Structures are given as structure tokens and as C-alpha cells.
Length: 421
Image 1: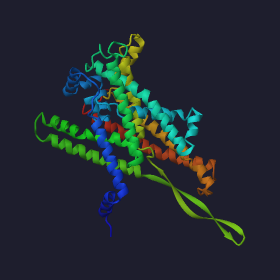
Image 2: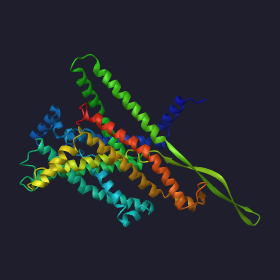
Image 3: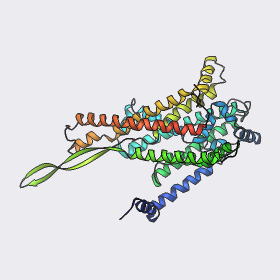
Image 4: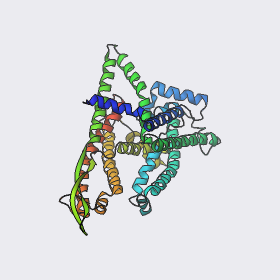
């Protein structure tokens, strides 16, 4: 008799014994290693600028901008500390995805692409990649402007309109190209690897920072007294992380199964007889959107903050004041309304993305075409309203859980500083 442990071991063993799955895993791991190699290739910097960068992160001065740099560094997998060519991460691509998803609701041509099968999906992705390029360039400008403010880059030499515009352009184009390389790697993993390439790249970047974060936490805990508190803190951190992962898996696997009856047809003599005999289920997941809403919400908070760093020195007074306010409050993770805004954005994007996926699946129409129906509800509009009401109710639980997980993740990256009232 198979026990849960033996069943789990068989599944893990099959990951290596099945040739196709083994090749996909090796392909994925290989591309993730390539990504980590790119994370150590820096943009063109002078020796003094490299020294300034090392001093900035080594002395903890990165907290001066409301911990925006620290937050960006975590999501870039530590690439910001070295100012590598992939320091932007996949954030511009995610922002472009948000723009395209929103545009489907107001641009009929984009909405029609989603109903054109594989060809429409490829065209939609191509447009998303094209939009990513200018967004990556703008984010590169904003992120470089932050380094100008903290003294890593020289304000006199970093100027697109000055005599050193070629050096400035080389930095911005290197960051833009690095983002496009990440997108290419992510799509290769999606097509030829285990799938979800962009999500795996983000996950690999965060996981790569875990040893350093644990070491910093241990040193910070033991520097005061050395009474073993650092070890206890790490154990508590790992325990909370494990419980959070178990809760995420539990919620993600949760689903509402809606019974569906399919009409079967068979010949009786010379006449066609119809009867309802086969019953299946529509699995409506509690969290059908995964981590996408978390990424969307974080991008919505980070992108305006990056843009404000570029506009903060503008000669237009009201524009500079607005940029100053945005950089001070919108990106300040120690303020309670930052968490509230992030929480609300996660819930909003969870419902929004669940609605987009629901529209693309078009379940009520497909059931009607297949001659299937939900007991007690007529095919067509009544079925759509019934399924929509179920989706709205179960998505609320998934949205609230995702919001709490997002707040918990950023609190750990923020550290132990109290939230300002």
C-alpha cells in the first residue's frame, strides 16, 4: 500500500526517470544559470562609480530613498547591487503586460486577438514585447536617476543632452537590452522548459538573495549580545516561510467543483435518442491568478516612484514638487498607507485578472456548443450569471490571502523597522 511519503518519492523520482521531463528540467536549470551569469555583468561604469556603488550598499545608505533601492534589489535578485545589465528585472515586461491587459477592455482590435487562437496570442505577445522596449528605457532612466541622487553616478556626466551623452546612452541601452534578454530567456523556459518562464526568473532572483539575507539577519541578531538569538531568528524565519508555502499551496489547490451534465446521443432503430447520463465538473479555483496580481501591484507602486526620481530635479516647480511627494510617500514602505495601497491593488488585480481569464475561457458558450448544462440552470445567460457569482465569491478569499502574502513578503524584505503612523 502506497503511503503519502512513498507516493511523493515516486513523483520526485519520475522527474528524473522520464526523459522528456528530465530534459525540460535540465534546460530550465541551465537557462536560470545563464540568467545568474548575466546578473554579474555590470553596465559600463568608471572605477569611481563602481566604488560609489559598493559604498552605497555596503554602508546601508540605500535606505535614504524610503527603502526603494532595497526593494528593487530584492526583486532583481541582487542585480542592483552590482548594477548589472539585468538590474531592471522583468518589471518593464510586467508593466507592458498590464497595459495590454487593460487595453483589451477599450480597444476592440486587441480584444479580437484573444479569440483568434494561437496566431492571435503570438501577435498579442509580440505587441507586448514591443511596448516593453520604451518602458524599459524609461525605467532605466528612472533607476539611473536614483543612483545620480545618491551619488553613484556623476550628475554632471550622466546627461542625455550633455557632452557625455554616449556614455549615458550606453548605460540606458545596456539596461534595456538586459531586460529584453531576460524576456527571451523566460519565453524559452515557457516554450521548451517547465513553463512559467518569467515567474521562474523572478523566483530565482529572490531565492538567490536568501543566503545573503539570512546571513545579514544572523549577524544583526548576534552583534548585540551573541546569546544565540540569531539562530532562533533564522529558525523562526524558516518556519514562517515553510508555513506560508504550505498555506499558498493549500489555497492554490482549493477549488469549487460545479457539476455539469453532458447529453449523450445514440441510435434507437432509425431515430436519434438523447439522454443525460455523463456528469463532469468545472473546477473553479480559489486562486486562479497565481502570483500575477502581486507582481502587477508591485509594478504599479515601483514604476511611478522610479519616474519621480528623474523628474525631481525638474525646473518646473509643481512637477518637481509632485515628484518629491511621490518619491517620499508612495515608495516609503514604513508608512501604513503604503501597505494598505498595496493590499487594495492586489485585491483589485486579482479580480481583474480572474475576469480576463474568465472572458478568455468563455465557459458558458463552450458548454452550450457541447450540449452540456448545469443542473437547474438554462444554457446561455443564466449559466453565465451563476458561474460568475461563484467566481466572485471564491475569488474574494483568494484575493484577501494574496494581499496578506504580499504584505508579509515585503515586510520581510523591509526588515524590522516599525511602520510609521
